[in-house]
Image (spheres, rainbow, N blue to C red):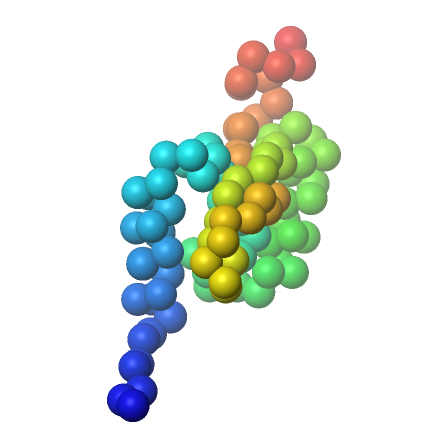
Length: 93
């Protein structure tokens, strides 16, 4: 059996295409820590450390989205949406 070589970027691109093709996976502007870390090319701990104050300040919110597990099933996982500065989205006024 031949070994299939897939780069990380090819895998991420395929996952993004799969995410775009499935309309009920959650808000399109919400991203998981893993997705954000991959996009920013940093460790997930860096993303968590940066997200935490944004959530507490009302500049981001946590939501649930569906993403594929390794077994192919869809699972609800936490994801995050940026809302902007407090007051810009109609809250806190």
